[in-house]
Amino acid sequence: MSYEEFNLEQISSEFGLEIEENVELFADIQEVQLDEFFLRYLHNNIPLAVAISTEKAKSEMILAPILIELRRMLNNQISLFSGVKFNVDSTRGLNGFCDFLISRSRQQSFIKSPVVAIVEAKNDNIKSGYAQCMAEMIAAQIFNEREGKEIESIFGVVTNGNQWKFLKLNKDVIYIDLNDYYIISPEKIMGILISMVKPESINSVQVNG
Image 1 (cartoon, one colour):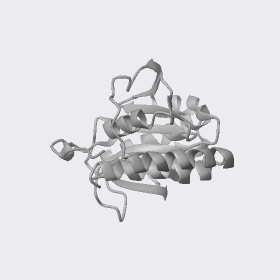
Image 2: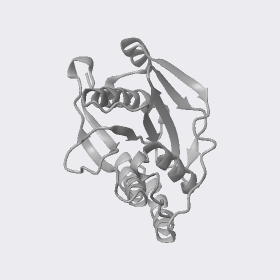
Image 3: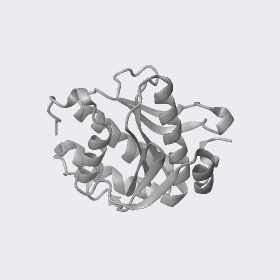
């Protein structure tokens, strides 16, 4: 078994987690100012990615550029991994590949705790990605605990490039944000991503726009 084989019932029963869907997680997060060149890049590439309409195209043309820009805006104080094997506990099915993984560490050669966010690209059916993303979030929580770097919340993102859905794992509850966010408002999406992964050490550092 691997991350992609889980369903929501298994996530709840096998890991003893409650899944809560009626909560607004990020409604109060403010938009951030984005670089004009980056906005032009998105404006040019989003229609192409949508026209190609594959997970790979959306991952390469929309997700990766947004996450790379996120890292730049945080002064490269986070690490970003793409298509990495993240085997945490194969006996419980917590093994396989993550589309994108973000750690609050500048170490880019290997995954170092604390892992704070998992981002999964899906073609069209957002809900089909919930269970896989949740399994990867659970693995991240266990990984952090083993490394002695427990953090309060692990975040997840499931997106088809256009629609973005955000999740949060806190102790034994996984929250699915009530709201959907869309790439037409990249300033809001980036604001949410920054709030999820911003290292404590960057509190006194200006977030570059």
